[in-house]
Image 1: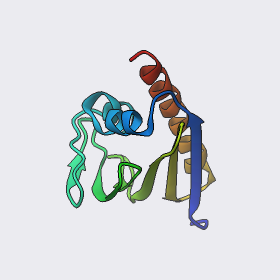
Image 2 (image 1 turned 90 degrees about the vertical axis):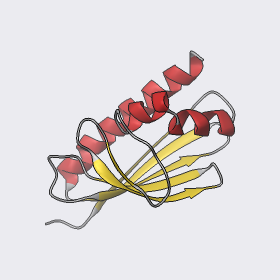
Image 3 (image 1 turned 135 degrees about the horizontal axis):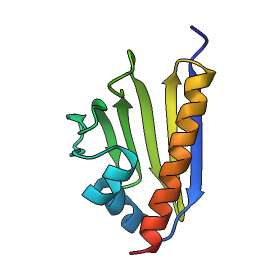
Image 4 (image 1 turned 135 degrees about the vertical axis):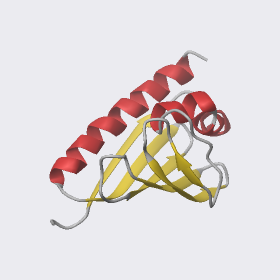
Length: 123
């Protein structure tokens, strides 16, 4: 195995940090970035309808969320950090096993931030 890989994707998004945060943790927003069927509560496990599972590790000041992330076809988990700033949204994923997985996840998160920005602009 190569050394652990990290990917980080950020984008400017419309809305106040509070609006972005509430959207991300709400049903419509969490379905975009995590998948359908999630309830994000600190120190609780989650599993989406598409089989991604993990545990919410930290929810801090309506600005940062950290959780483990393991799609059903992975044999390992990774850590995902979601950070909401003034006008920005950042996803950082750590613990990816190789460059190929890193590239796959970069593409995934780039699509996520685009869909979130579009959804927020339409609200």
